[in-house]
Length: 108
Image 1 (tube, rainbow, N blue to C red):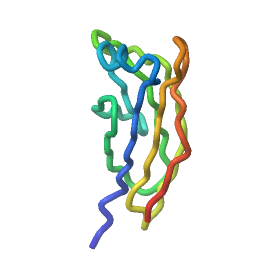
Image 2 (cartoon, rainbow, N blue to C red):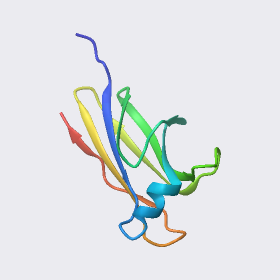
Image 3 (cartoon, rainbow, N blue to C red):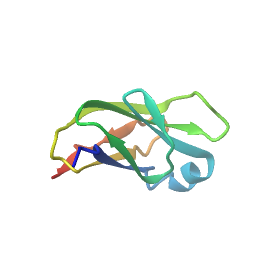
Image 4 (spheres, rainbow, N blue to C red):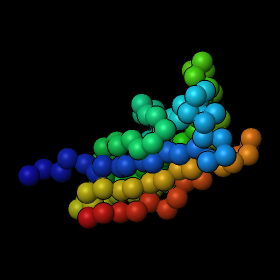
């Protein structure tokens, strides 16, 4: 059986204080290795090849197409034999806060 890649599960959440606002007026964006992924607030799964990767998480207002608000970036790696990597990105509570990307959790 050949390697199908590693599933990266990214849970993107707004702060509790402003969750209602973000769910109505914004949408999060996940970018892995320069490729934007279709996503929404909650969990999104993306398959990547084993190796080094760069994830960026940001949001846009629904009427915007290119803005990168509250952006944070982090490197992570996957290796052969890893089935899944879980990553959490939480938006801070204040206007101007960035996403906090947690340490990836690896599942073999």
